[in-house]
Amino acid sequence: MDQTSLILAIESSCDETSVAVIKNGDIILSNIIATQINSHQRFGGVVPEVASRHHIEQITICIEQALKQAEVRKEDLDAVAVTYGPGLVGALLVGVSAAKAFAFANELPLIPVNHMIGHIYAARFVKPIVFPALALLVSGGHTELVYMPTENEFKIIGETRDDAAGEAYDKVGRVMGLKYPAGKAIDELAHQGEDIFKFPRAMEHEDNFDFSFSGLKSAFINTVHHADQINEELSKKDLAASFQQSVVDVITAKTVRACEQLEIKQLILAGGVAANRGLRDTLDKELGEKFNHLDFVKAPLDLCGDNGAMIGAAGEMLMRHQVFADMTLNADPSLEFDWEPEAIK
Amino acid sequence: MKILAMDTSNVTLSVAVLDSEQLLAMQTTNIKRNHSKQLMPIISQTLAEAGMALNEIDRIVVAKGPGSYTGLRIAVTTAKTLALTLNAELVGVSSLEMLVPNAPQNGLVVPFFDARNGNVFAGIYEKNGEQVVNVLADQHISFEKLLAKINELGRPVYFVSSQFEQFQTMVENTLVVVAEHSGKLNSLPNAHALGILGLQKTELENVYTFVPAYLRVTEAERNWKEKHPNDENKESYVRQIN
Image (cartoon, rainbow over all chains, first blue to last red):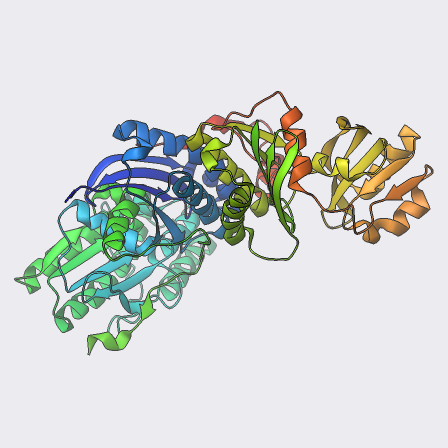
């Protein structure tokens, strides 16, 4: 039996158009990413209609280049995988329409991929995922703990009740006069400052796995505005360090507790904010001290943001589970995992 | 020449397979369904009815706009990707121009779509048998200004629009030339006419750079340009990082 599989994977859920060719689920033959950050920086955030317009400019260029760079012919492919949600509906539709047309024209099976499974499966490029596992997903749109008892089973045991962590970074960044997206800049500033403001750690000690970042955001903004009013100059480095410490403390506390209560073999850190050094280092340290047999796998730095490779990695797993879509596949902007906080008891 | 023509610019979805000008099969729906779900299955069915395999198609013709932004992107993305992977020719035809053949007689034809707040997407065309020539370029324009431009031309016109009734009073009060309009029968786009117009075009689209003719910049970009009149570095808005 032929053991190799080649998947063309397409991602267009937000502000990156990306197409990858993935071999056997964990080998990247190509991963073309066209990012629109420079465009959305003009507006201080992603404008959906502008994003959709950029996607349609880029989509066929990215498909062609992904095949070319991988040195793969259409005839060699086994399937087409595509992100169909969650995300911006107009943006998703470009990828979904292209994937359907490509799959139909080349008589290939079509694999519908949940973008969040994609983020988790970026970890596959480090090492195989071992179950039961827990994923900490932190991005601009999501902050959630996802329990995976077996392959292709996903249960949310905790999530943010208001802003996602990445969203809080961007809002706070705007107040500090930083360019969108502000995550990386805040992370860098934080490493040069100290947590002197002691912002609130919302829900840190509550008996659940949920998060909340809007109170932190308000406390931050109030502090800055108050200083403005009395003409006091606050250190950006200390502001960044204090904000980041609050985010990292809460996420770490909840994650450690989930790891204690679940019998898991692996913890996976993924999503755009997984590139945050403060979060990576703190989790490394805390988990290393508390657990002997827990394998902590961080998505590779260059695959934390949105990309086609992770969609291909997830697509290969879904293909083995016979998850296919027909030509009526539609975008599902609010797609999410099942919410099962009881899964932990 | 074997042609696959498709339009999802507005509520109507129409797909046709032609052998040169000859229609082989066509499917048109005019219900508020989801074009994203419907388009590929209808393409597949229409090809099957025409007894044609997708890889026999020489040219793909798509209505490129104006129209609903999301609707336009569904057909244009599908057409681009099919053309790329089949190595077929790609032709874009104005979503307004494709309504011109609906007019029963020769002369000036004005297709338009409602664009809200008294505005329309419209163009003025001269129809002469199967030949269609553009007189006023497709644009986003207030209906009032459009009527003024028609009055300047001073010749009878034929409006094609499924939303004509909303504008009828204004036409009667403002227009000094003779005007007729498409009834329910002649107001809808059909992909057969689109295919014939696409067959006549000699200019092919570049598959990679082809985008819908939105005819409007986004509100965010309009506001940004007002504040930054000299800032124009469009080339670097999107860049590859891998």
